[in-house]
Length: 464
Image 1 (cartoon, rainbow, N blue to C red):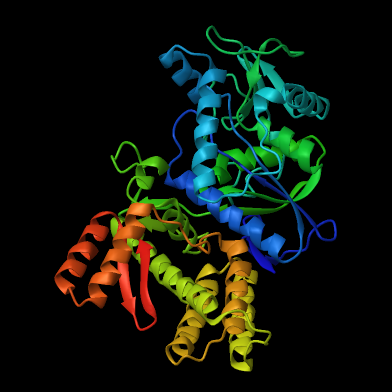
Image 2 (cartoon, rainbow, N blue to C red):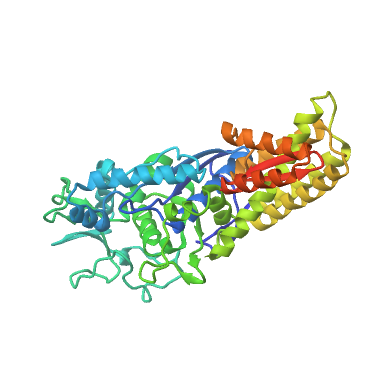
C-alpha cells in the first residue's frame, strides 16, 4: 500500500512501525460551534483510511482529539455567559451525534487538552531542558531558530515563514514565528498552575502531548486538513522532536472543500453546517459525496453534486434490493455460486484493492464496484442469478462496505398505514382499477415512498 506523505512530498510505501499494529492521530475540531462540511470531510476521509487498514487485517489504534480550550472557546463562552466546560461539552455532544449519523467510527481515544494538563506541562519542561523554550511577560514560547528543520513539512524556509493563524505577534519574541506553549492567566479565562505561573496551554502543544500519551513517542500516521499543515502541524513537529520524540512517521492531509467553486467562508455567506445539510440530504448521501473524490483533491460542493451522490446511492440501493428479492423468492439452496459470478467478484476485489492501495484512489475503487453492479444486473435481467450467487455478491458488498460505510442492507419496516396503501394499490391493479392505483401511488410519493413495478413484482423505496 502507498500513501502520499506530506513531509516527503510524494507517495511512499506504508509499512507499519510495529508489524500489523498501526497508530493514527487525527486532529479533531475546536468545539465552540457546530461542525461544518470541512470537518465532515476530514473525519470521513480518515475514517475510511482507518476502515481500510482494518479490512486489510491491521490492528488500528485511532485517536481523534477535541480542542476544548483556546481563544474561540473562551470568547464564545463569555458571550453566552457560561463556563468554557459547559460550552465545549455541549458541542462535543453535537459533534458526536453528527459523526454518528455520518457512520464515522468512534475513536479508540478522544482526549481533551483540559484533561491532560500534567502531560502538557511535562512536555514544556522537556523543551526548557533541551533549550527550545523561553519566558516572556505573557507566556512561554518556542524558539523556532533552535530547530533547524522548522518549515520542512510546509516546504518553506525559515526566512519565508510568517506568523500564521493563532500565532501571537509580539515585539519581544526572538523570532516572528515563535509560538506560545503556555499562555499566562488573563481575567475571565480558565487557568491551571504551572512551574511558570498560572495559565493555559497554547494551541499546538496539546496534540503533541496527547498523541505521545496514547500512541507512544513514535507512531505511524498523523493526519488532518490541509489548512493544518502550517502552522499547527509544523509547530507540533518542532515541539515533539525538540522534546526528543521521533513522533509521526507519516503525514497525511485532505484537500479543501469549496462551495460552488469558492472557498467555504462565513464572510462569503457560503458556510454550511452539517446539520443544515442534513435537513436537505440524508447523512448517508453526505458521506458518499465527501468520500467520492480523492482525499487530497479539492472537493466542490454544490446542490448538483449532492443530487448526483443521491442518485448514485439510489442505484446501489436498487441493486441490493434486487439481490434481496432473489434471496427471498428463490429460497436457500445448497449450491455454490456460478463460476461467472465468482470471477466477477474476484476481479472486482482486485480492482477495488488496487485502487485503495494506491493512496486511497477512491475513483478507481468505486468504478470497480459500479462495473460489478452493471455486470450482475445483466445476469439478473437474464434470470441467471441464483440464491447462492446473490448471497455471494451481497457478502462482497458488505465486505467493501466495512470500508466505505455507505450501503444499506437491512430492509426497512414500513408503518402500517403505508403497508396498507401498498396492498390496496396491488389489489386495485389486480382488479384493473388503474385510476385508483395511480391515486394511491401519488399519495405514497407525497409520503416519500416511490413504487417500482417490475416483472418480479412491485418494489418500494424511501426517497427522503
